[in-house]
Image (cartoon, rainbow, N blue to C red; front, side, top):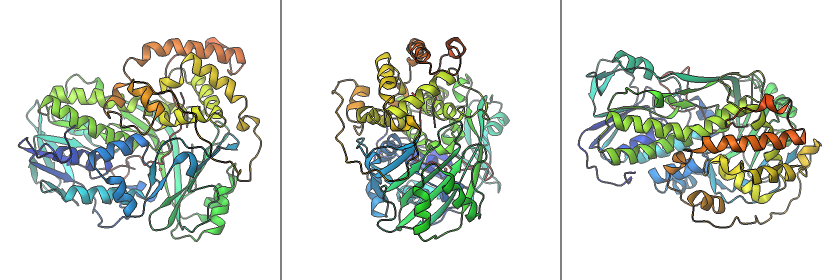
Length: 557
């Protein structure tokens, strides 16, 4: 990837549409290679860390996954220090974030990651301030794009709603879920991508509270997750800048409070299987009203399947793939795509059609695992409709057992967390030896007994048994998940997994069937594939915003 401080060697202009996390990330990458970078956004961009109209997720939680933090730090060196100086709260998720799921609080055990908690507006403001300090970058707000211009083989610029035109050597669409990519490229005679969609009717409501020491005995943060299919509700409390709590209540298939409904918000907390958030709401002073947001479906546009694409044009971020926001994957994938784009521009030297195809293949690999995690977890609910992943019945069963096993196996929890945070591919959790370990260990999980837990357990911090070091980058990340992996290889690691996965799935099906862990006969579930278990990025259409990030994804194996 072009170094962020690299002096531009390319002549010409790059235009980025959308000033959300995806747009700001890719603009910073392009600023290292183009003489001029222009960022256009239809919103009025605030000079303070406050939510804005086009980004409804600004009211809700946004913790970067570890891979996203790596990628953004590669693009904006020193970013974490800037965020902490502005009031963001550092935390180690295994120790400082209490997680309740499957009937138990997970013990406090270090997992080897150092994250930061902040509001989405603070992250966006920090990135925008860093970007606009560059002499070759100009950001225009209150500016809407109406069309692309092109000559039949490439995109040559953008036309604005007020009739103005910007010529460009490269245009990147980061306008989010409501992106007009299909309409824009179709008007120039190019084919449009097919899309996969998973209808989930997920939503969440958030309120800010004043934060004081001792408010949350469980730690710096608390996450309460449902055990599908019978539980649909989730809750979360995150510490953010300004000594505030960001408290969110969410759920699948309509199980979330409406805006302004404090009684429903409090009732949602009381209905959760653990009462930590109710206690927090009782003791902390509210600072805002309840604000809610609904998200009807996840959507993935398959640009990678197109053989004829325009040179000089890319769609990325939520314009490429928009996930269920509860899993917290959108910002991370956008930042990883920006890193990949920088490398590909260095390799190709120009934004050719070949470079665009290579980018879409890379972007597809980056989103493949998160998409499987999110869509797989959503299909744990029978009401979910859409493109159902193969093998989902078996893999969701295994996901449950895997997460139960992490309640009692510190080493396995550390490994599972690196997969959750997209540092290593999920197939490391699906070897025959790992399947047997998971099934054996999970039998001792407190959550398997289904007993109610109301008191905060006094669990001492235990040292995690280290995984033996190895020369292989994936194995090295397992041994030390904070290691700086080559960011682009995170997507490339997905190559070649499908062939071996069929064998592993067969082993998994056989073992689960022998244990009687399947709902039906083994042959009914003997499909193959990968799946997952389980609050918005810049939009050009305010009605269809890009997905927010909750900061805790819940993948299956």
